[in-house]
Length: 220
Image (tube, rainbow, N blue to C red; front, side):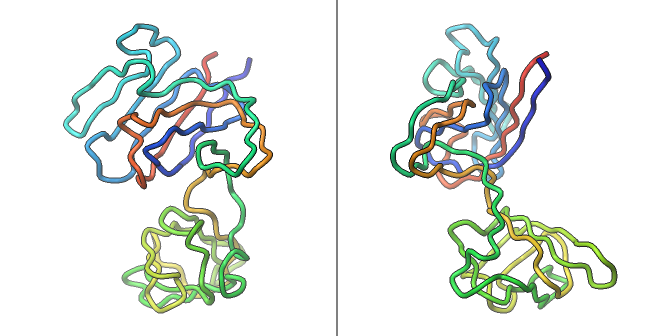
């Protein structure tokens, strides 16, 4: 079987989370992208002791703690029918959010203070999906193609001067793509949950409103 690897971001909830990948991983590594005491958690299907069945966690001072069953990470075989829209079962979402705003299509980026990498969009954005972590692609000023940056900070709804801070300064131009702030989101009603992995509500890494990065894959 071919090796499979995937990486993405999601929002910690402090509640149970099922991350649908389309396959059952042999290993999962997770890291908080925010400032928390518990910064890293790891699980491997060969952690088959009672002391470490849920993986290990590593806090900000490097202390490694074993995680027992039911309070960490586990495999999830999928197949559950999700009758109502859910924030517990997640799947990848990469939809372009330019048309999701509340005041018309987000079609233009306006650079306000290049030295601070700040600017705004021509219309209010949908802050339910767009914010810190969103990828933005802007048309190039002097040549065909596009430039890309990440939204690092957002105030209000992004349509007034200096409300949006990017990872690099981009000149005023057309918005070609505006992505969601996380890669994985709750599934709609009627979904059959995909296989993947499970994060327990009490997992050290699962802090509500913390952006989380995961990597998952299979062995040869």
